[in-house]
Amino acid sequence: MDINIGLVDRSLRIGVGVLLLVMATAGNIGAWGFLGLIPLVTGLAARCPIYSLFDVQTCKRDEA
Image (cartoon, rainbow, N blue to C red; front, side, top):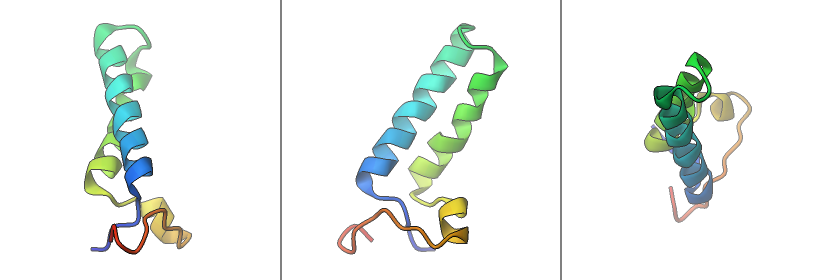
């Protein structure tokens, strides 16, 4: 499995995912915050299925 998410994209996804999960757990934004699992998992895996569908790649050759 090739990675298709670059370092900046990964960092943003992980940060947003963690933030949403923390806010949902604290009760600030409701259950919708648990959708933060999606960017968190894709960021940790460095692979986005939607990027693969549209042949998008945000990582540089040296990151792959």
